[in-house]
Length: 255
Image (tube, rainbow, N blue to C red; front, side):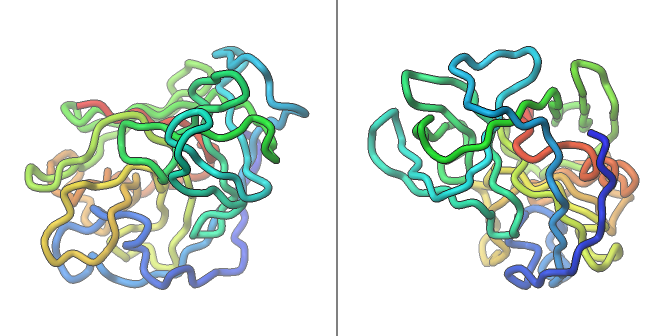
């Protein structure tokens, strides 16, 4: 990754940042604070065609959606939803490919529950990319490790979900990289939104069920189990995360 983030004109997307992440605040009224979100651009290595074989080297295959495509529960099976070229936060829709079966690609997407994959036709209008980035979070260690081509480039402590609202574990994808207009908001400066969903939203919570890695206005909680499911990171680490990690990167959250 060599691009530098550039601030584009702010877009008032869905008005509340809580739609992007469920466990970002901590249970106080500030959790529902509105913020303007600014999507950051994607930088990855495009390939001319979708490779027939998914290889670990020179990187994991991701595909960018350029036209609406149906997502199915199994190859050629029941339709569970559709992917469009832009996410709800106006980022490019880029999903990681984790398997291939005939003319079908298995992808990680928000359209299926945690722990499952969706299937899209390899013949769809797709722009392939390769990425050597990966993110692994350990809830026990309350730590996030970021690697590029197998080399550790970031390692930092995070706050994790409380016992009542635990952070979900599994294999997820980066869906959006967002800047806020207010670093003092509960989400801090920036958000790395994930495909993960919080199945244990508190009663009365209206902020959505998406999980993210983000900065925080409560840095004293980092290292503790205090959130509604999101991973709260130090501001400088969150900034670096959204500057470098490409859309579609796999994020593994372990117990």
